Image (cartoon, rainbow, N blue to C red; front, side, top):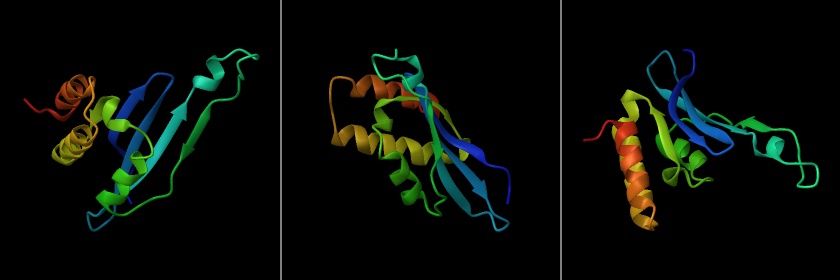
Length: 121
């Protein structure tokens, strides 16, 4: 098994969500979601300060399962940072599908950020 690579990395206020992937010896990908939320550490005791939240999901073996790991969050509305070159077209299609389904005043701005992250002109 190869070393995990970042497939999608999203920086959000107070943390980050990323999808990592590993190729097996046959070239098939498997995926895991990582979450790091620092928000609880930024709160005062009165507001409910707590340790950071950090965890990884189980590994999944298909692209639809990988996207489903992300769909627990409104990821398409967040700022796309890094997108693995091999997955840019897939990510761009997933982003557009979600933004069209949930059109709102911020969708165009989100689409522009993802277009840059995915290398779309």
